[in-house]
Length: 285
Image (cartoon, rainbow, N blue to C red; front, side, top):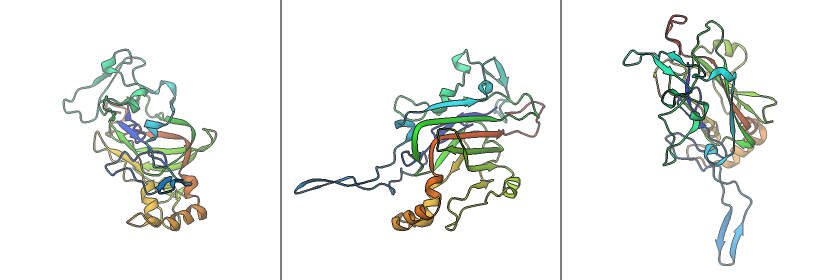
């Protein structure tokens, strides 16, 4: 079973928060404005208007989008079922039932807000349990935005359960016709590195597709985050004061970094849930 909340920042998780050239970071850092420029200026002769880049906006607040899940039966509670959270303090199993609000974890919970417009971290989407091990429990969670956007900050996912052993973030620039891997997160990246994915990115290769082992530990058992960092790639060229725009824009022209960060759709591909090594016995989440 996977518990997810998306601030378009998260998936298979407790809260997801996605940030883009029109979105906020969802991190503890303030929304970066380093890619924005002034659109108008007041003077003695009146208002002057300029070609400009607007400030980033949080795509989950401002954009129209719809969310889909594959396979359709992947959400728990379509039939009443029990699940056993790993290392629950009371040691008890729990119920998921889509017909009872208290025990329901529908896809709409992946991004919902409280009355003060802050993310509702007390709710989450939850997958079915991995009852048919060793058959794969592969789930696609897809956010479709119906227009083109570009990441200008980090994309972060928060899990209500333990983070998965393996997951991918994919993007599409053509409304889901084709997909590109943005980043891979795995407990063991060796197979992905052998396939040509990178351990990190550099100034010479800022658009490298990376597999990282940094976000796939079974702990914490709740609240763990998975993150794709656009900001770190920008920092290679902007410097500590985020001021060297000429170099950043030249990199956009000379590499595919700009294209890498563009999307109409974002997909979280969950390919191996967290387990406590007693797979097939009891505690598969």
